[in-house]
Structure formats: structure tokens, C-alpha cells
Image: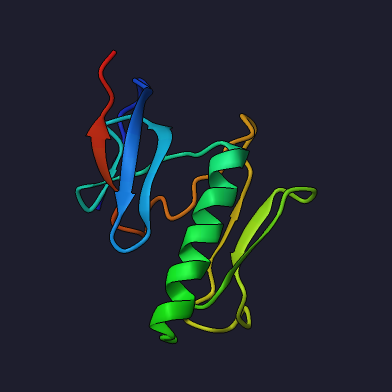
Length: 115
């Protein structure tokens, strides 16, 4: 279930994804996916997420975690499997230059940053 409020209330948070790590990003706490955060990340952080994800995926060696690729020139992050695969996912940079990697599909947990 997706909860989306018409009035955006963007805040900076640190987002955690099991096994992968903690990453700084932004989100509207009112916009949720099955109760989980729906973060956006800068280009620099997107690169970190891809790197950390690939490190963990390489160790776990499971088909549910295919390698990720990032191409900043095209503004694209994707799972490096056939597009017909159930594990294929793709995210493109948005107008604000951020990447919503895993938003509305992964279980991102946020820790609010003190203002």
C-alpha cells in the first residue's frame, strides 16, 4: 500500500537497508510503501549504494541479488539481469538529480537526523 500526501514535507534522514548499510538521503515521512520509507539519494550516495550492494551480493551469491550497475551519463541504475527476469529493476535520475533506488519496493528504514 502506498500512502501519498499531497503536501510534501521533505526531510533529510539516514536510511538503512539490511545487509547493505546506512545512507544519507531525503524523503517525505508521510509517503510510505507498506510502512517503509521511500528515499531519494544524491548521485554520490547512489554510487555508494551500488558499490555496497554489489559487495554484499557477491558474498551472498544468491539469484535474488543480481549485480547492480550505474551509468551517471544516462542517469540510470539497474539490476544487471535480463529485463524479463523477475529480479530486474531500474531507477532513473529524477528532475532534482536524485535517485530513488529501491523506493516503493525495498524495505528502507529511516533514522531521523537531528535538525
